[in-house]
Length: 551
Image (cartoon, rainbow, N blue to C red):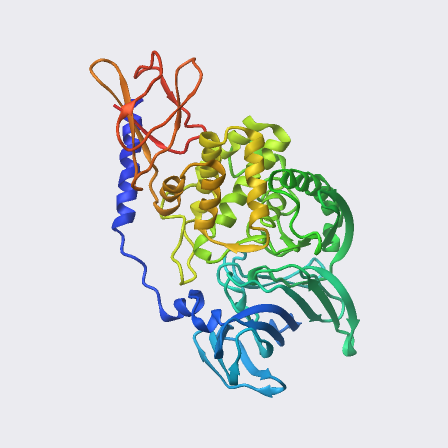
């Protein structure tokens, strides 16, 4: 056993050293234009969008406009918005007159005829057209997805997290400045519907048989959540009596999926809402409702309009990602993507480099759902099973200012980090629930940073957990608990970690005894556990995602 632990330890160190020795990725001017918060972006604060677009499925083309209403945060005469270079900017209008503009990569720069004064409110409208990038493996890549239903009718959806919403519509394509409200108008050919975010305000029949659907979003929304879903959908609905009263549940599915949808959604949605409201606080978008929409891809957390493509089966496309059996008992896409309504949609990272805020908490929400349905032991088994997906290949936090997310370990490693913090620092379940609900309350409908999240935990727990978060978020390797015995038989332990000043209390016991929470730092210190020997020492590696080296 000691040999095996030593091999694990050596492997972890080798991985960490290899990652630290790798050269930093080179970033281009286009990356900076996409990800950096320059003065040409921060000079205006978004208030309202009106996206008005016509969808031509046969040509895989769009034509339309987006109105930007904003408040000036400083005096300026030039600003940046974003639209992929393969789409044509037809014109930009300001006060009914065209504005001059230039393009560089996927950025567009507009010059106003006079200085826009700080504090003033103004607007401009971008008219555009073209064939947006077609997503090949959505939701992992970005663009529009084109498919057909069983009758051969068009079935079109957007999916653009990561690559950016400007892949299909003009916007200020970053996360730090969410628009306060939005009208989404989508015109589709005869016989089709569009389902977008928020609530349907009106449906208008147009000449030639086309139909325009106007959806209004009354809450702040990030760009990548804005969605179009075009198809021959049928509707059924329900409602949920939640913490803030009546929440409407609207389901839009293809006719051939109606029976399956009624069964699958009934089995998963209300239990999910009850569980996640209990853990995280009220569903964040009562004003806009909750929708599930049939999608020609696996799924995406589009705010108040969750895209669903899990083929009406439990698990993740029919399998349990944790390998424990607990993930086979519920629909992964409904639970996970809905969990993003709290983390990702209500609480949004300002830079995609901090996307762990979205994915770590949402992946952990799966375990909290398991706990609410099957008990805490089942949840701990589920979290432990998530480790099979961890690579320890790169830091979870990405590179700031260039629109680069970190390692995919932000999902499962991040979930294990949160469970470990609960185990080590907040073993009282009621207090843990209060902490998670408080996090959502304090940062409700805000864009936030890693530092704010860590600061909240430090304040609530009353200890500095910054080194713990840094070790798991900023380095690929795991901390290793090194235990050694003196000639007297006394055990000592320390942490070997990449983060300076790392410390973490760990649960240890002599086999057959009760676990004790023992403070451990990067300096050797005695382990005050009676009768502890090399042979009977047990570390709680069920709940601690660490390496162990026992000499």
